[in-house]
Amino acid sequence: MESQPEDTSQPSVRESKTVTESNTEIEMSKDIPDRVEIEETSEDNSKRKRTSEAWNHFKRVKVEGIQFAECNYCKTRLKAPAGYGTTHLHKHYEKVCKKRPRKIDSRQSFLKKNQKVSGEQELGTHIFNQEEARRELASMVILHDYPLSVVDHIGFRRYSTCLQPCFNMISRNTLKGDILKIYKDERTKYYNLLGKIMCRIAITTDMWTSSNNKGFMAVTGHFIDDNWTLQNCILRFLYVPAPHTAEVLADTLFEAVMDWNIDRKVSTITVDNCTINDAMINHLLQKLPTRDMPLDGKVLHMRCCAHILNLIVKDGLDIIGSSIERIRDSVIYWTASPSRVEKFEKTARQVPVNCTKKLCLDCKTRWNSTYLMLETAIIYKDVVPRLNVREKNYKTLPTEEDWVNAIEICGKLKLFHQSPNTVIQDMALSMLSKYDKYWEVCHILMGVAVVLDPRYKMSLVEFFFRKIYHESARFKIDEVRQNCYDLLFDYQSRCCTLNKSSSSIGSLENTMSSDVHSNLNVDDSLDEFEQFVVSKTSGATNLSATSELDMYLEESLLPRARDFDILNWWKTNGVKFPTLQKMARDILAIPVSTLHPSLHLVVVGS
Image 1 (tube, one colour):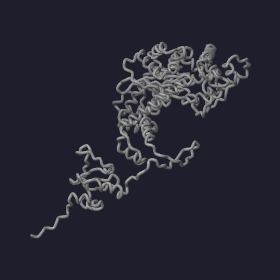
Image 2: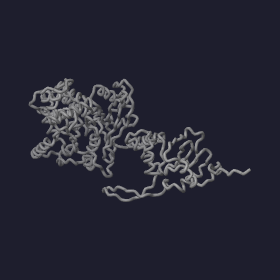
Image 3: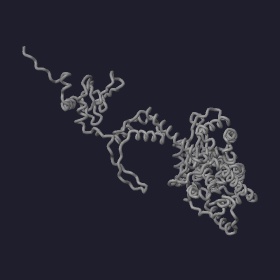
């Protein structure tokens, strides 16, 4: 019987294992159609874990029921059924694939651009460090509030590999550990720093409410370090269980202060102006060692000036609350849906009015947002009556008097001065009563801070107090002067317990900008103040200085320059005024607001 020729179309398992890689690729290209559905198989579904290093560069795919290994770089598919081995995969990755990432020695130096202080760039060397890269990754997540799952995102992993193939991506649990390590390291650094500095620390605290109505307390420390640089650090951000009574808040804040071991270094505590905070401060005065505080704790309580300003203006706005309410209701109506917004803008162009600004709704607890709402609404005051005729459901048309009040408010709100309009006069009286109520307490240290500015000293206090208090100005001026003397004597009596601050200091950054981010027109008043100083100096007689404060006040005022660095001035004049320097270091670190520096005022839409 004639023997049948052996069928060689399908290789045996042994032959498949010994076939060359090039033949395997040719065979693959013949068998696989151009367009196929690819089914990826998950590692979790495999019967045994693939431990070969080859699978770091390939993934399993199934094409028409046949298992293949697809190269992650060049997308070539090689047969890889069960028991097929991975030798041909290794050969493909090491010898055939032209798109594979090149192996890099982690000890190899690379060129990188370094930024000089002058702004120029120069080439330098850089050696990749896995630990440093992990720390920077954790810092990025902290800085930008990214989720821990960012390390699982495919796009982020690809991007990281493209930037630095040597970086081994970490898991989210490892990232969490790195973040906690950074926190512990930073906490230890600041704990040691706060223990070494020879100055007082000003505290600000505020309550925050989360979206699920849970209360959190933020505690921030403010101080001037040995380099005479203003420092701010968040000491605690912790959950405060209800009820938020004065006792609970006082205990929480006290524990935060004790935890950092700064109870004997607290100068002031700045809080929002409310009754519960007043009671909280009273409880703290019974817990904290007042003998270590300036004036035995009499100036511990500082009220947030931004909060007081908000209360003052809101009191004034309540006088014309009905007018504001009708304008607010109109804004709500015409911003309720995209169709209404489109209709509003179309009518505005017909009037015609340039739609340079969009209507914005205010936050009732933020006076400046109400101002912005009115300022924008006034632009479209001629549009609203036209819309009232065409829109039957619109029932909140502001009256002509409402618009007059709104225009008058927007013209006067920035300056807070008198107006012939009786409505504005009523507002001013209401605002002034609240101003008088809180300024009595606030101005003690704020007045001293002005005196410690060598551009103004007592002259600015005298100038403005005469405008504010009129007949009683002399008494108020003497009170500020006496406060300065009391603080000076208090610091002098403690000099045996307070070490002299370091005078061998490095370079100083400009820490306090004199630019006032405000719409208030103060330039005219300060120009008038300079004329006041000239007239005052020409008629003054030189008296013999009897104290360090007297010598300081007798010296001429420095020119009023916006780029003046007050901290640098006190740093360099400590030899001449050693006690005043200690006072300035403590008092100039006290914030007048509990708000974050980048959030001086809450603006609608921000």
